[in-house]
Image (tube, rainbow, N blue to C red):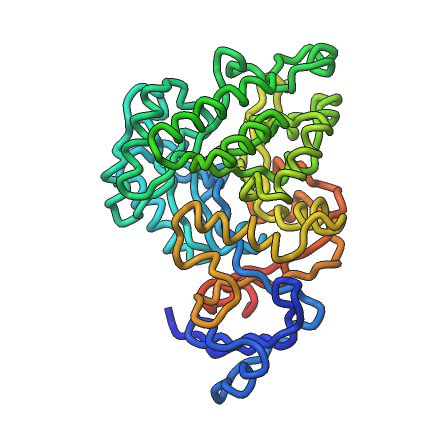
Length: 440
């Protein structure tokens, strides 16, 4: 890749903490503040960013890119483009591909596809168990030592139900600083048909119930296993107030547990299921408004560490079924920042430095990505996102960069729009266009 011209970003509101100039040279932030302009070499390009907020590039801990195996729903390239448009500079691609990412060869293939696309850093997540079957550990060590340097492992979509196997996985990854990301769903309490929060609504709609306790008992077990092994566990897509209660207790005890919440669980509620629209079928399911309120509080106070999209594209024939038969999942990469802005920033629960923490710094730390989430500071790689904080956008599913259209945000007005995304000094997305389109 050719060297990019030096770029001087003028007057950006860095982390919402005040206007500063930022100089980027050879893919690195080399100066900020009053000295940035004086140090700019000849030929430096300028970008006037008055009124825009500058954040470190966003990092998504939980993305389904579908390749290999379901390239009709998404590819690494199209998912990477969607991520760049959403302000992301790195994504972690989940393991439930076909073939499953349970060995070094598949992990390296996903890694290489990401490098070839070039829009974001794509880091494959390795499966915990072979074939996601929950019976035998996958090749954790080989994936960790591979060219892909896998550090996060998950059977997402399926719970590692066997406590002994989960313990062994936690012990194994401890040796190289890995982390197990758990899909917390006890299948005896919420089986594969469960698709609606268990309560009055599920009974009235006649939909199989997914009780909160099916998540909470697995979260409680796993934090105890993490305490016993001294290893790290990460709780994917937390959705209930009870899980937050367990997390608060575990963190107070010093357990090495982290957790994520999705944008849809921060905004959408179970009431949307009343019309049986399969767009809103997701796992774990949308919960009552009381749970949503607790999740927002937990994200603001740090009990939940990160926002992760759980971007789950599906082709129309997998979604357009009766609700109980439709596939689980929603799109999320292009709208995640706007949802967080609308739910957390606009209402005053969080500032922009907090957004950087939950959408960049903490996810990068959890995943062990040393070149991501390092802030807007001298010497850091120029992985940056410029945001128009007050722009209101009406989401149009037809304009999504994803190959799929299962977009729960269609027709909604969301506040906050990504103006520009930069990966190591190269603009990968700008005002709705991705790298390569700007010059056309």
